[in-house]
Image 1 (cartoon, protein in one colour):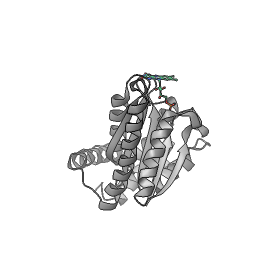
Image 2 (image 1 turned 180 degrees about the vertical axis):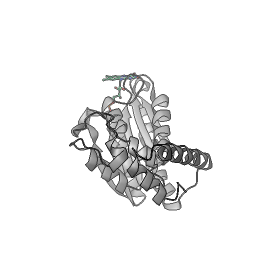
Image 3 (image 1 turned 180 degrees about the horizontal axis):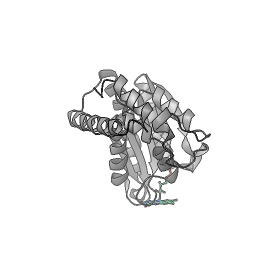
Image 4 (image 1 turned 90 degrees about the vertical axis):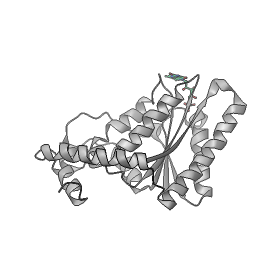
Length: 222
Ligand SMILES: Cc1cc2nc3c(=O)[nH]c(=O)nc-3n(C[C@H](O)[C@H](O)[C@H](O)COP(=O)(O)O)c2cc1C
């Protein structure tokens, strides 16, 4: 079982969020998973230009690190996504990655994967970021198993508690993958998304050939 953790803080080894990401990875490794870490801010990822070529071919024409990161995400059974709160949202680096993933969303290509989210904020905003990234995981087709947010102003003792929670959430992620834990409410959401994406892609099949074939092969378009 493979778990990929992505940290989207630009602060490298000094990142507070990294502490939570590493704790979640430790939990996942202790529960028996193979783990990999990716520092997103070390990667070169350009903005989506909305050219629509990925809808046709399944590939983005921009030559940068996106394709490599996407294949790592595709190869993983579980994802740990970490970001600091930047102006009540995720960092621009993480949003830039997510904006490149419209094709993944149309295909619901992360169906069967599980994910967790960790975030740190100076004074707040962590609940909003967990909600946004949890929803994003589901929109990609994955199941969201949990989120941990640490507010740095709450002090070091509280931060240590959040680090322990992140470790437990990393373990939970591995158990969810191993047991294929069902999340009934998310199943309803996924069924709706598949219906919605199938209708969208069918209606645009001339410009979304790759996605049409993908959804047909998965049996999601009759
Ligand atoms: C550009 C920028 C924007 C930020 N915006 C917020 C914010 O909206 N709310 C907040 O509570 N903290 C905010 N912070 C503080 C960070 O979220 C906080 O220091 C976080 O722990 C940094 O994580 P890192 O060490 O992993 O980069 C911001 C920091 C920066 C540099």
